Length: 430
Ligand code: CMC
Image (tube, rainbow, N blue to C red; front, side):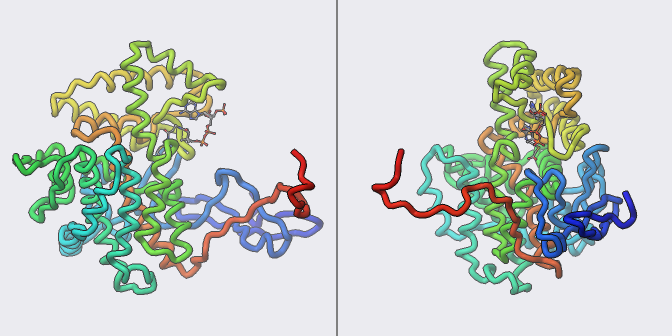
């Protein structure tokens, strides 16, 4: 590419400045295109469009690289905790000891939800999907903290961030308790972030729940791996909603809704249902691979493929390795792991998947670990949301702090009828 890329259009020459990121990713700045030429770009699914520049997460889909604030995901997975990684994503650096202590204290102190909110849970049918409950509860938080609605009130932002991280965990656990008809378990300040969540999920008033350190470790790992993934569908949603200067609670609630879709975070539930279906059918995995390749069928191999990764998803690599050791540690023999391993083996040696560079993604093995930890299938996407929360927050914060921030408002190419007049009812045909 020339050093000064140019666009020739209608006899005009337009300079398109080349923007180069810190990892040498290159983008053409087309911000003056429409003003100068009356033309816009069309890019369905944003296959070629960078919606923003961002300093939070680097992802190289060809090489299978993922880094938060420059730190490889492999290092964070091995050495960090979810709370520390959240701080890193949101505030841009690893915390010092006192910073981490303060941040942890903030998350501990704000973990209760208002008693009135508890009654909201009674309004949902027992069959309600926990993602529906989660999204409405998150936006409802804004009614209890109206001061957070004014996003220009900068003093409020840190406390709102703390409240969100602390309370989403409580809401998630309460929605599970509601779904199984057990009493809510309040947060316990003596427990760490993940231990507190597990205690709220699994303890009952009749019996103590000894929080197992291996389970806490596994949960930390899964949440870290989900914590950010740059401009994915839900994060772009959070940014777009936030670009209207919408408060953090409402923006995150929109992100929860976007995540729910089966092509995005909802895939982890779909993977487990697919593995259950394969197991129950007793059919060899090859027949499911054949269905996934058949263009007349709408069946896809869930947990496979990714818009950005054209190589093994580094998160899936870590989860796959953890899966085996966690199942062994818990003494769980899950035939779904065998099925998943076989599916992967068959798919990765099949031309259809090779040509399209379809590899297992983060959702392929995560459900097997969640299930080993006792988390039910319909809570899997909620777990993803809990993990993705610091990423969403970091992007919302980065955007509102940017001097370049403007409301997100894409253009379109109109393809509907040209001028057409209103017909009275008695003159309409058909
Ligand atoms: N099974 C079978 N074929 C597939 C699959 C799959 N899982 N994924 C993609 N393909 C085929 C697709 O049919 C298309 O084939 P062709 O070129 O012949 O038309 C080709 O591969 C390219 O697929 P695409 O749908 O154009 O790719 P995309 O970048 O628009 O979609 C995706 C990416 C993740 C939505 C897609 O791979 C998919 O539906 N995967 C299954 C759902 C899933 O696991 N989602 C979780 C993604 S990772 C976590 C997250 O981001 O939340």
